[in-house]
Image 1 (spheres, rainbow, N blue to C red):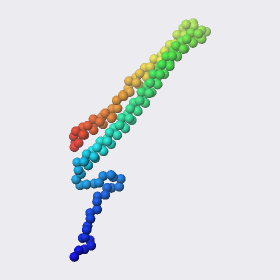
Image 2: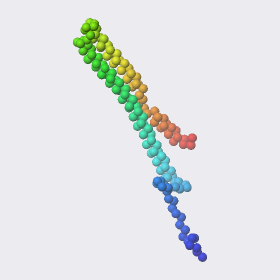
Image 3: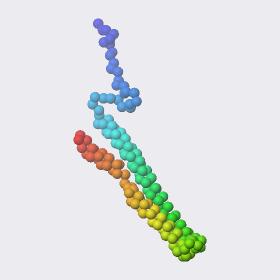
Image 4: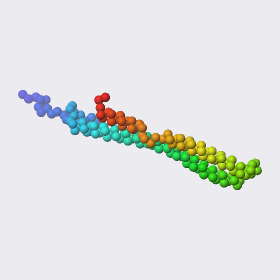
Length: 150
């Protein structure tokens, strides 16, 4: 006698979990493993690119501020010439001799230009164009790829 429950039992196909595109299997094939590795490497490369972008943006911001100080130094240098000329004409002729007044004003602007230049140059030297954290994580990734079990 044949029972209805023993007739034609059909196993339900493996259904992937919601949101997954892969069908789970007990023994994944070489193709599936290569596909997973490929997806993981793609994700890793994307994350490394994002990290590099963030580091470069940070360095560019610091370089921009240092460049602003150097631009201020250039402007102050221009004012040295302008104030030197104006001081020669409209200087402190009533307090000191006209030539001495022109030298005092010119010296002030020259000192300001030197200070701005020194600070801007010092800050520009601290800017590192190489994304250090990205390089380090890439080295870690390379070590992991060579020896993934450690």
